[in-house]
Image (cartoon, rainbow, N blue to C red; front, side, top):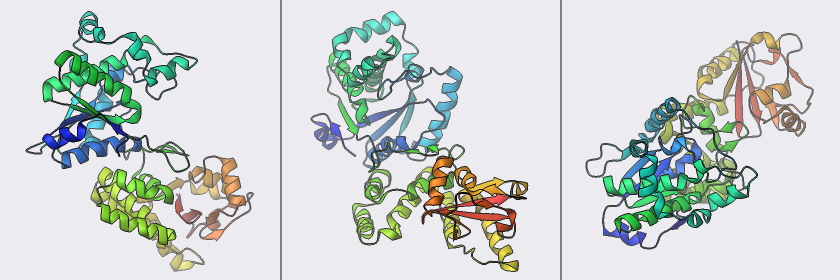
Length: 419
């Protein structure tokens, strides 16, 4: 998880308890899977006896961080920020212990101090310590200067605000370490420099790698969009499926990043992946572990049972009473597995085009992709392979007239409920 750090950090950890912080962007009411690596860093820090602080940037969130962004973000209202802050607080509480007797975690809002500064006071107490030349050397600023839209003075000042956060946390809580993604290195070192100049003390920085998949795609982006931690935004069964779909080349690395499994446990799973990748045991453990962390063990266990039921269900040649029993079982688990509800009337007459069903179930990102998938023999309907892109599905194809089971490859199944 370590991409880079300042000199002397190992000695600082060895010397005693370290207080460290990470900032979280409140542009939505939920964190997404791309936020999990820094969240896990804070959780590991606390489990090792150190003190974590999560800043939810109610102040900086009104400005927007230019790091890694091609254009300026839309500014949020205070009402939007307050709603987003509350959602993020709830999610962080699943990972951090705010009642630990020795090293409780803290959540703070930087609006508490940034909102108190007047412009002249901020320029005098913070701005005077940074030259424009220094700020122009930062990668996040340079990239935006090279873009067609450039960078506004508002976002150009973001570095100063984040540096001020580090000073405030140093003063209030003795915080001497800031952590974040590797794209935050410039902002972090600015805070270290400011503490050195105004407090004559040494502070540290640690950054983690930006996570990508083995195919080079940004982690957390799928055909269906962003994978959120909030179950209202990304259903728990879709969340679990995201982790089940992890490439064999990524799964061991993700087990190290996103679970608390021991080194020995991960090594065992790596061995199984190398010798029997078709079992996808590491992916199943990854999905179970992360789902339990994000949604709770009870919900994660229920969804795992439902998915086991989904993949064990046999739908070939079921008729009469057997069809009714299979349909009952599938309807019972529909809320906990990938599923779509459609009106039975849509399947009357000529029914629905198969490629439309595949796209609607998000087994493909578009109808053209669904067409290619069907033509290549990658789709089954009730466990029967269909390779005709002009195929249509009627109510007569549904199990007991109520349920259709779509399958993409060997890994993904999706229920269609007819109501």
